[in-house]
Amino acid sequence: MVFEGIAKTALLGFEMGMTLVLVTVGLTLIFGMMDVINFAHGSLYMLGAYFGLAVVGVTGNWWAALLVAPLLVGLLGGLIEYFSIRPLYGRNPLYHILLTFGFAIMLHGLVTEIWGGQVQNISTPAVLDGSVDLVLFSYPLFRLFVLGVSIAVTAALWLAIRQSDFGIVMRASAHDSEMVDALGTDVNRVFTAVFVLGAVLAGLAGVLLGTARAVDPGMAASVIIQAFAIVVIGGLGSYRGAVVGAFIVGMLNAFGPMFAPQFTDALLYLLMAAVLLVKPAGLFGNPEAT
Image (cartoon, rainbow, N blue to C red; front, top):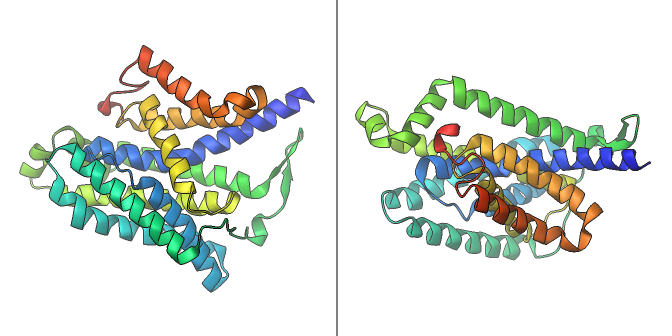
């Protein structure tokens, strides 16, 4: 019985960690390439959930929401990068922090004004409703779907960064953007593409987690706190660090309420402090580690 509970909690932690990867990878890619600390990233995740809610409301088709909502968030992310962040490249990072923090506040107010502040739910598609018997326990089919999508996207993105021409340009731009620009590649377009990619991933996570849990304006703040903690634990700008950090935080979120429910919220900060004391740059705090 105890082993069954631990196994089920471990699977839940793995699922939570892999879905956090979708949010954190975008954040860490944007920082690793552009040195932009994007405080609006959690709001883009929230918008993905609300756009998904709206698409399901209009079409009644959850699969359309899974496709359309992330693209809409990506389009918005591209507009934000092009018209507001791009003119600030090369300036003090404080400009980016203040700008994206302003966007986070504005998007929160906009969502609250349009959809209200109450908790809402996105209906699970009928084909993914129900549970699957995993010998020791049963597990919701939709959560297994979320886990599978998260693993597939994370692996595909890793291969794209390591193997594709665009991935090579991304890594080269992160190391020396001026040299890449001098060789004829439009670095600004690369930056915009990376920002759009990060926004799409955040929007995708918003639809998936908004369906698995609930949709409310407070979801932006809760996820951005964990995302920044993961980035710090894993190491700023490191893809591998983002994945490992998200996995650790996912397990912490799952096992914390089981073994230390009164300290669940504090465990995240204690872990972050411990990692910073031992490795101030994070577990994989080398931008070259991507």
